[in-house]
Length: 422
Ligand SMILES: *Cc1c(COP(=O)(O)O)cnc(C)c1O
Image (cartoon, rainbow, N blue to C red; front, side, top):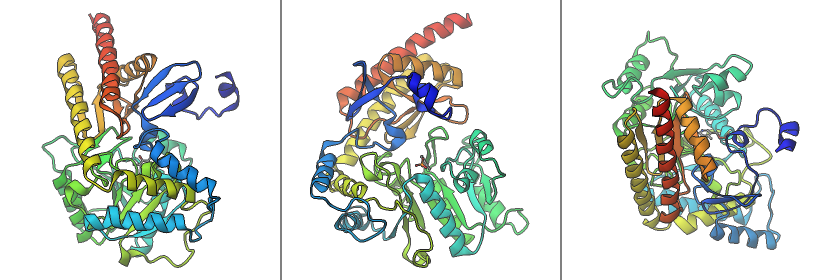
């Protein structure tokens, strides 16, 4: 750890919350160098929906490597790319009545967000993007401009521009429909906001605190986007690939976004792979107009193809996500009720948040849980929400064992906390 402290930049973050040297991992379990076993409820911030080193996916990758398949090919045509395009089109899109063109972008989520913003501006000839309070879209300048958090915005070093923020669903409590506000402002010729190029939204805000948008709200926002001539863009980077139960997080609301942004678990193995799904008529790029060295890495495409074939050819995977999600929710809810203290639980599918009210309490629980063998990260504007993001493939025993650790930690923390208060 001393090497880290002296050689790695001060900017490092997860290695501070979880101080250990992680040497091996499989499924939902990580092993540290000194032999500790940790249950992973962070899952690479949603990049490991199929668990660590998923063997079905790994096999396909090893086979591809052994055959000297082309790994890096810029965006040249390869059998790996063709196979991915075909499976994604038939298994994911066609069965859902969706039709899109694929744009492979640079490897990170932020790269894909930048491409989506650029394309929206190019299609509409407008510049303003509508984003939402507590939204998170990445760390490049365009993506930061669309992210709410002041800590990140401040680090950008230049003024963020081109984005207007609107209140997310529930921002003013359940009684206020913030879609009405959005509609009124955008339809008003004197509302003070330039006609937008796009409305960019997460269906569940991951980094922003596991805030859940309702079906009705999302449908309204899509309708408003169309009414004002803006593109409706869903950032499905963290909530896509099954996190909320179905492959896309917007299926439950029967949406048909103009652009869908995908990354994190797309490759299925934690390899960087990002892309946009674009409605055909919006694909106005000129050849080579938006380029990049690492677009559609073939090893990642092989892994992504294997993940689709292993998990998405039937309904069984979605059903198991629903089951595990229900189990998590009922156990978290029981804990919130048992301790009172203003605790609340929210989320969809296997993306759940346990709101502790204060950063201090959330931090103390996260630290103690790690000592007991559970990796549980925090999110939300004050880092006050514990984020439950286990691999979608986790078995019931490991899931329950992780929840047991959380439950014990919470009970102990509350005992100390009450003693300190009284
Ligand atoms: C993680 C994330 C991003 C940014 O992805 P990076 O790969 O970290 O650049 C963008 N949007 C959402 C919703 C995310 O969760």
